[in-house]
Image 1 (cartoon, rainbow, N blue to C red):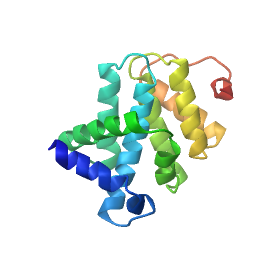
Image 2: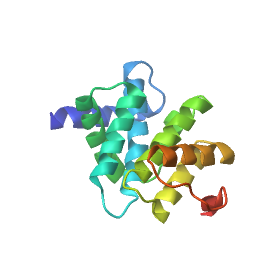
Image 3: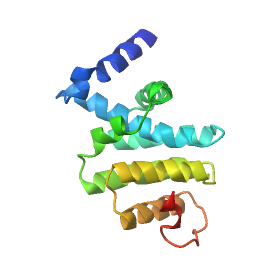
Image 4: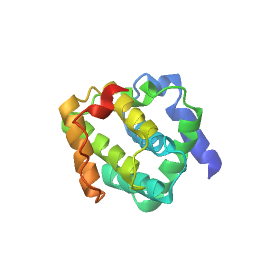
Length: 168
């Protein structure tokens, strides 16, 4: 199974597929890119909480209509990919073509990962800001996605000035 995952990763990250392959391979590449972004938010925290891993898998199930087993495999592949990545652009560029509502839902899912452990670190906040910037998310939409995710996590409203955390 590990070889199969490695083969999939190698094919997804090859120059040919990164140049814009079509069909099933492209679908998998987009799923991997989104999964890596979710994992990057998870990895931004000092400790990898079980709640954050669970939030990543739950987001993958929702976003791509995967079975829990498929989401587990994709999340594991994304973790390995994220450890080897040198930037976020290779991943954000794959989903930047999505329409704004779909990108906003992705941002909201990433905020859900950040809030899964009940707190938000400065590094998580910075990673979120960088990803939103690369996805060309308008500031107001970004803040509202954050507020929806915070409310969904059952956390008290953030009384800081809107957008105060985006100055990183």
